Amino acid sequence: MSGAPVVRRHDDADLLVGDVASALLDRLEAAQARGEVPQIGLTGGSIADALHRELARRAPDSSVDWSRVVFWWGDERFVPAASPERNAGQAREALLDHVGVDEAHVHEVPASDEVDTAEDSAAAYSATMREQGAGFFEVLMLGIGPDGHCASLFPGHPALGATDAIAVAVHDSPKPPPDRVTLTFEAMARCRAVWFIASGEGKADAVARALADEGTVEETPARGVRGDETVWWLDEAAASALPT
Image 1 (cartoon, rainbow, N blue to C red):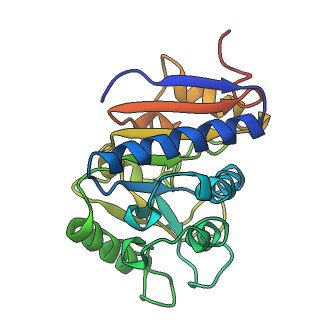
Image 2 (tube, rainbow, N blue to C red; image 1 turned 90 degrees about the vertical axis):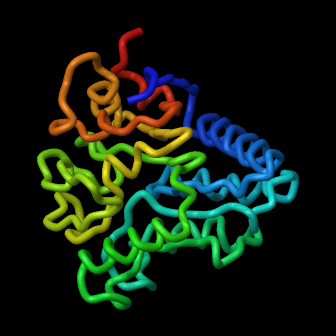
Image 3 (cartoon, rainbow, N blue to C red; image 1 turned 45 degrees about the horizontal axis):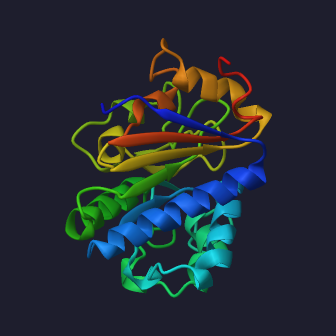
């Protein structure tokens, strides 16, 4: 793994979202100025939704060319394509439909009405990433659950041990829907930057476990993801159980 995680604390969720949006826009602008087409991994959840809306709001004043950004997801719910539970649908409604993306650069995880099984979906998503991925993410954004899960890697689940795989199926998820597709630890490690984004007191214990000196990935899967740079973007409520 790469260097130690960096923690950035913010007084409240609004300041957190604004700071992450600024940092992401700066990062995308810098990558494009180098002549790159940056690839990023999006996540779901309420704080991600707020971030996506803030990015869309700021897009007209940014120099980011969104048609030259490639989008992936760290995980997805294996439900029909039109389901409101889809992370991709939430991201489209909040961000992608508003900023002029190139649809050829938006790589959704195949839905349950497009392939037969979550295993088929994981295999197809893996194949697409092999063919069209850059081999790394410029930024992979992740949330953390109160149980310490990230993407759809849950405590004690078999997917934690997946090797030689980009994406795998997850069944019997402890939170609905039960069937999902997730990137593996190995795939998520191929990042210039991993950004965990967490808000609210309900995440505080999980954040503290993830950043503690001692603990296991089996108990707190978020401990298992690091990039060349790893940043935890937290509001004070989510950071409240960390040592002062």
